[in-house]
Amino acid sequence: MKEVILMVGRPPKDDSRDKQYRVRLNDVEDDMLSFCSKETGEAKSEIFRNALKSYYENAKLFKNVLKDKKSQSEIEYTSEKKCEQKLQCDYNNNYVEDEFEMDHISLRRAITCPYCGTENNMNFADDCNSSYEERQMGPEKEYSFDWQECKCENCEKDFRVFGSIWEYPMGAYNCEDINVEALVDEN
Image 1 (cartoon, rainbow, N blue to C red):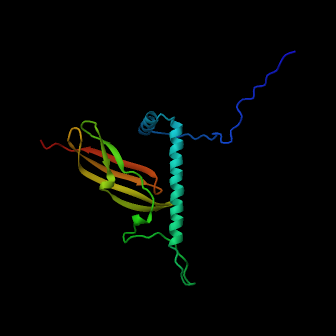
Image 2: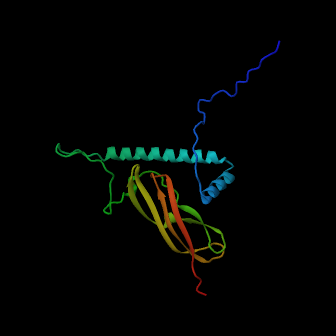
Image 3: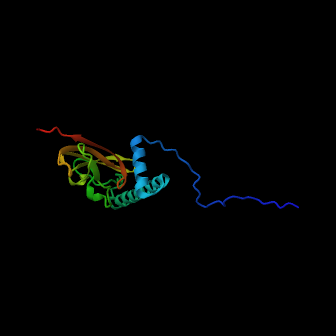
């Protein structure tokens, strides 16, 4: 008589990862993902999951901040007027920064010297202009900067750094456009 062995496989997990998404990256984005994976020792898929979780938590937090601010700023009107809820705005129709009691994204970046390739740490929060544009989940904040004469900490040559970093929703990194320009030597 032969003995029959049944192979069942792994038991199903309550939280199985059976959803798949295809992400298309350009060369620069792929280099960034590879760098993060190498430096942290985490799989690329884990980096995406961590980034999603961070973005999700910031979006939830901002949604609650908006809800709390709207309920606090509710004003009772006479019966012929409708109640209107809005965030406080300054005279330029920009949102008052103090209205958002949450951490903002970091404006610190390592900027590569166009002459010698040294990474120079810079904090654009030290000197930038900010503006807001209303979007579905509240305002998108743009930090703009134009640093005319940055000095490389290694070769001591001057270069220019200019561009913008966007935060949306509040507390979450959205995108950036940072440009580095070598300045012509006067000698």
